[in-house]
Amino acid sequence: MASFVFHHWQAQVQAGAKLWGTDTFKAKLLMTNTTAAAVPDAATLAEITLDECDGANYTVPTVGTPTVTDDDAGNSVQLHAAAMAFGSVGAGTRASKGVLIYDDTDAGDMPAIWIEFAAPITHDGTAFSVEENAAGLAKLAC
Image (cartoon, rainbow, N blue to C red; front, side, top):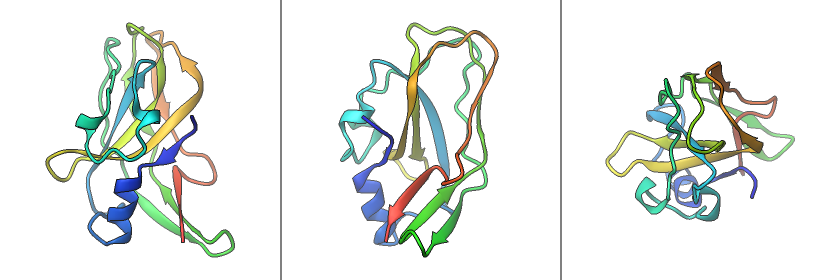
């Protein structure tokens, strides 16, 4: 499965109930037993088997500098943020499959964006971060 924006969170954004530039977002590094890619309609983290990274020195970063860019030509909105640093992550029980960005503003922690790696990553104690590509972290269709 590829990267995506969770349906429930996108509906909340379109209704004006959730705001990318205002709410507080955090990022979890998830290992290969996660079900995040299989539940794009999850409304809370409790609906996902997280399988969160258990490597030494792993930290959950707050997503910094969330901004929005209007892409008129592409009929979409791009979501941007600063690089997410997870620390000098040691080897975990399993390799990491991707990053789950979630809205930490309210109780329930609503999943927002799933970023799946091209291949699972085995950590070795070096600094690990995830940054967006030229198109941003995700796109919302207009």
